[in-house]
Every structure is written in C-alpha cells, then in structure tokens.
Length: 101
Image (cartoon, rainbow, N blue to C red; front, side):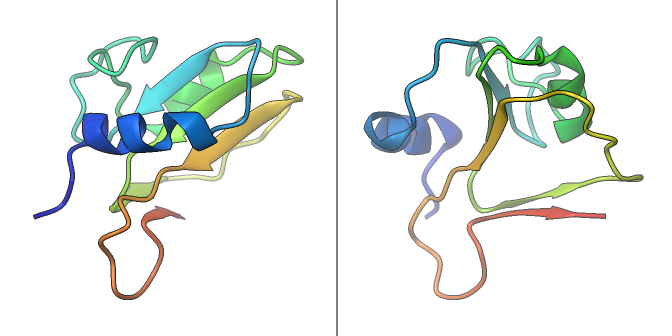
C-alpha cells in the first residue's frame, strides 16, 4: 500500500531544503484549500505557482506517486520558487512524482 501524502511529508521533511518563504502543498486529490497546510492542499501546480511569491524562497511540494497534469504550460515569471516532487519510495520503475502536459 502506498504511503499517504502526510506520511511522505513526515518522512521527507528533514530532507527538504530550508526555506524562509511559504510552503504550498499540492495533491491532485486534495480538498481545494489554499495550500498553506497539508490539510488544505491545492489541487493543481498552476494554483500553487499563482500563489507563490517571487524572490520569497517559496516551495511547492507535489504529492508522491502521482501525476500532476497541466492543460497548458506555465509561464514562470517568478524567481526563487522551488518545486519539489515528494517520493513515497515504494515504486519499482518511473518517477514517484510526475508533471505532464
């Protein structure tokens, strides 16, 4: 059984780069919140990029073992935003987190 989003975050939190900005949590099966906490997850990468602030060292954390689909490319106009795909570690092939157009 794949670990939950919360379990993967708990396992990964010590390995994430230190940030002085905000963290936005994205889970395609999320609840459509504002992304500020793991129980208020955004549902798309586009929403997270829109919420992130330029030059603020914000992080966008993508749920593990999932595919984040985009209907169109994102025109990144903001600087110093880290997009981190979390990996549940239970995969045999392919990436744990994917972004596809």
